[in-house]
Length: 121
Image 1 (cartoon, one colour):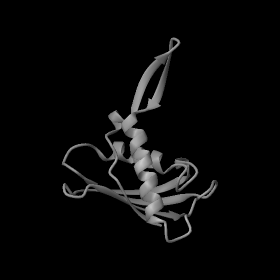
Image 2: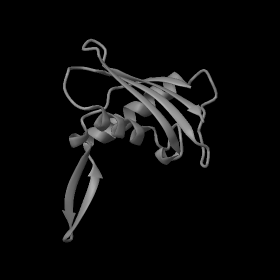
Image 3: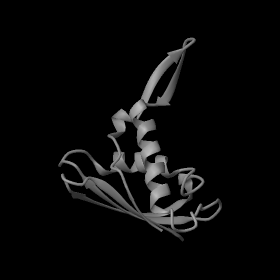
Image 4: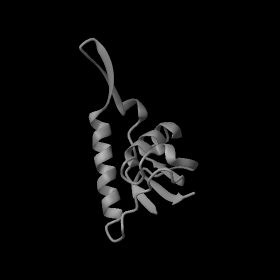
């Protein structure tokens, strides 16, 4: 299955720490929730004409991922975390199913995106 998805926000903008009743909690930021919704919309649009695959545990997966950055800053692993978290529960049950991962980075200021191919291992 090949998908073209929106480019994720930086990892340092994905989570927020808050204190409730003296206990610290880490929550998804508003930007991260919006990104997950955008990934869900893109996934539904990309798979509208086919049966939507959902890879359940214990099936292991391999992914090919190409990030097309909007500008030449940032590292590749932070973007990867946001992407896998957004696909969890949508394309696969849990990102722990990913056994093999090939990641590339390129730049495309005019059309930042992520191209992902997901296959059973």
